Length: 180
Image (tube, rainbow, N blue to C red; front, top):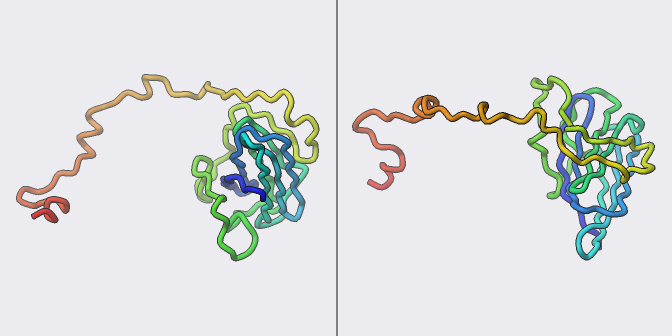
């Protein structure tokens, strides 16, 4: 019996970000079809379990321009859309999405807030059409040049006082009223 890895997704008007969360994946096979089918398989875990996945994406995709990064903890795909439109959902059909597919809130941007591309921190991508050597020579380090300094994280007591809720004298909060 095969297992399904956890999948997170987010989109932009021209692409979909798909992250397959599978630490220490071995024998990774991933195939993307122009009609929008993403087929994945790999072995992982101490017992070398087989993980498989087939996603019928909402619309057609550009295989040649789509990219993949096979990392130590996950497989990250940037799937380029053929039509530059927002999708109403990730998968084709009216069925409820499987429990292992979740929104990637770290990458999510609303349609009206789409201002550009994400910073991928120097990830090395190979194209779907050219999977040769995808596991060799990847730099999995992160670019920390945009990290916050300690000065950026200064705590101000002034902000805390503004956020406190002040209740008029003689009135009880909802919690105090329910105890009375």
